[in-house]
Image 1 (cartoon, rainbow, N blue to C red):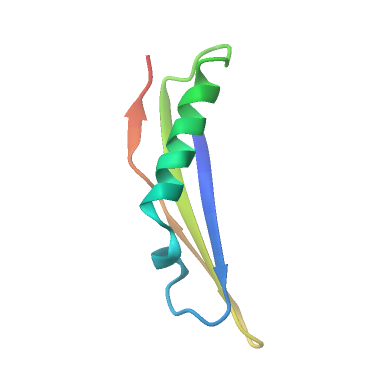
Image 2: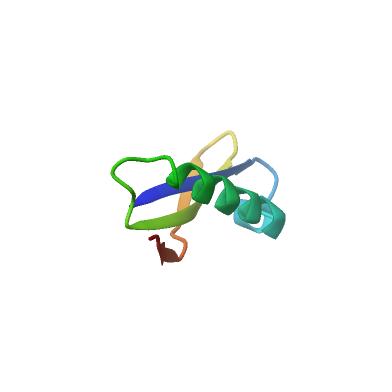
Length: 73
């Protein structure tokens, strides 16, 4: 499996994962599919995850949102 990750970091937003736009994920998917055609051995599956990082003066919180995995020829 090959994996791409979109990371959103915010200090003043309660849910950075909500700042990820569908256009960004579409662009990542296109890039991942394009890259996959050149890899040897070819990946069997592809996936895009989102990491949300929220921080302030006291703490840093990291949340992981696994994306759907899709088969690759």
